[in-house]
Amino acid sequence: MKRTLQLIIPLAAFAILTFAYLALTAQDLFFVAQANDYFVYDWTHVARISEQPGWLVPYAGSFLTQFAYHPLQGIALLTLLLTLLAWLMKWALRLPRHLTALALLPPVLVVAFVMGWDYGVFGTRHYGNLFSPTVGLMVSTLIAAISIRLPKRWMQYVWAAVVIVGTYPWLGFYALLGILTGTIINMRHNKLYTLLVAAGVAVVPYVEAHTFFVEFNSRYAWQAALPFMDYYKTIGTWMPLYAAFALFALMHPLANLLNKTGERLSAVAAVALAVAAVCVVPLHRFTDSNFSTLIAVEHAYGVGEDDRVLDLCTKQEQPIRSIIMYRNIELWKRGELLDKMFQYSWVADTVHSRNLRHNTYITGARVFQQYTFWNFSYRWAMERTVMFNPSYTDMQIMAQDIVYNHEPDLADKYLSQLENTLYYKDWARSQRRLLDADVLKADSIAMLHRKIVLVPHGAIDNTEFCEYLLLKYFTNLFALTPERAELSLAASLVMEKEDEFWQVCLAEVKANPNIILPRHVQEAALLFALKKQNPALLSQIKLMVGPQGAVCQQFERNQDLLTRLLAQPNEADAATLATLCPGTYWNYFFNDSRRGTIFD
Picture (cartoon, rainbow, N blue to C red):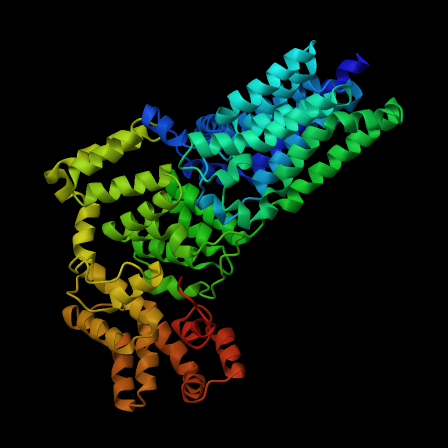
């Protein structure tokens, strides 16, 4: 009974803690990792993924990753496989039951690797990152198990040749890791075998990668099948994974070393090592709050829960530009943009990433799509696809852009691919109704596009950063519609374009004499009138916004302060304004917009 508990308790504790921890901290991460992966049930996908050595491991990982569309389902699946991996290592490497905790070290470090992902999750050159290390380690464990169990020396030679030469094209690095682990265990029994295996591992991968995989850079032959997210620039992300591989390869010698201290002491040491590995997980986790908010927002958009986005964005104290853009999109959808947009922080943080990323690259395609800029949205989604791999997110974005751009033949191509997926096929089928020109013409989003995008194709540059391009477009006064007037006023306020603001504002008042101007428009009108140092104009603007209104009353209480700031800005007066008038356009004008805002 005691020996059975020595096996069951560590595995059960690992499974419970892993599931609970990931369920509490990583549901959004699992969904986004899945959304940026891609698995299609056809041979074209197999042909695409098999262009590099070791392709079978990421293919299997990609198949499993799709189940993280429901994050708890993906977390449960990964927890199950990691627990199975721990048991498999214990069995394969012949660890005593009192050292079962040693077998938990690689699985725990795999969890640490996943939790260390940052913005690189939005662009990867590798399929199945979420599950492929676990699948690969299971394969390596089975290869090692066979190596150390073959009774005849000639069988070991044959097996080594089969693994290095025959399975490397399918399993890549994991074939090499498995045979090297078995060789380390058998090393003292056969030095010639060890030398031949080492030589085979050093030479064969390069030869086969160079010969059979002409589109693959053979300098990475020994890393084939490993996850790849600009990893040569982000070594810190991969350290837990490299540590997991090293511990797996050296686990048998480590167990022998611990056993020399006696059963009780060795068991305590094994548990201590496992606890130390567990401590690595929260320490290695990428805890940037903007990243947590952004993946929560992407999760909400991905499952059609747009109503959650505004609340997520407004809770972020110092947002990156992507979150500011999403926040303004949701305010605009609710008709609250010009009343509330400056009530939240505009002091933007940068993207703190080990990878080379900027906001337009990460979220530009979705932002442009929200504003119905179909061509621009398609361009950024396609650029990500070409640079990395297709993903569910980009395929959805491109399919919808093409549908609304009324290119039915090309749209059919993208929708057909998504119809061959497990969780996106229903969405793709629902889009087919829009291939009918009459249905598309009557669609509310298509009608919104005609009211907003009032500029010939090519009239604005599509190479600039997303937010700056949109602001510049909306402050260039093409034909106005009520929908576009709102966005034009918002853009002119952000860019502090007074002439454009007055043209739109006065046009709106002239067209609707009884209109109640939105709060931030009133604030800007009063400020810009004060700036002109024309008392008659200021009195007229006060009448226009309503002299008894809350905005005008607040303005009159702080008019002297605003006058001083316009004449000679200073930090003391700006700080006073922030205290007296938070959440106003005045505070944005004198404080937030002066803090080095970069639209990227």
